[in-house]
Image 1 (cartoon, rainbow, N blue to C red):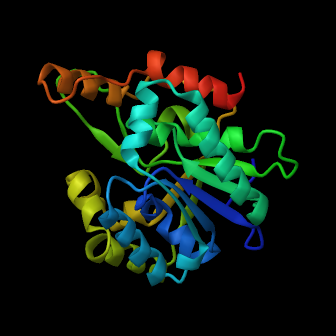
Image 2 (image 1 turned 45 degrees about the vertical axis):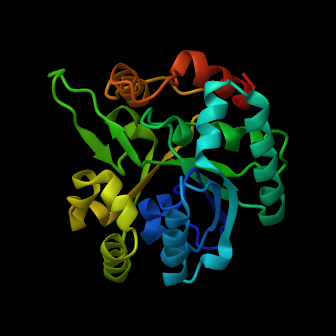
Length: 265
């Protein structure tokens, strides 16, 4: 298995559904200087601005491409099972890939935590269809809800590949300066991310943040593993019962048809 962190001469592209997700590989990005594509605005200008600040702090703002789709649009198009919309996003991404010609692409992992995160890998696969370059593709872990025997307990795992996928995992140990910059950015730049994720992110130790992981990307539509929970469906049903939303995104009804079409299955 190739280690995507080995070759310093490789051209790299990181594809994220939301601004601020670059924090997950903030050490790798300092060392290997990838390009970036952000599919949505993350729900607001403030998150975009914090990504500007984060990338500027490591000299990579000029490497970033922002498609600026409103985050709400992605949710709405998932609800409507609008495959053509996501095909059009893949076409936008393909245009950037044609310009950059990456050897390695890293993108948001499919973790069943957020359907907008999870549609990123299918979009990448659709963008690479019939692409002659054949870059290696890896998934970047963000956060997932782990399955516990005690059904009343909720636990999240941040920036780690599930044990069920350990064979696909590759790791990078950060240098002291890289880790210091990452820790400082968590407190001084990515404040919205910290507020959103709370202790799940804020309580991560230096030892945890000092190791970054990716996994070899799947070539078929991922299924929920035994050590993961289909969190976005579970949460949507809860919000429906509370009257906070009118419609829920489901894996089989909404996500799966789009993912199957984008993967080309």
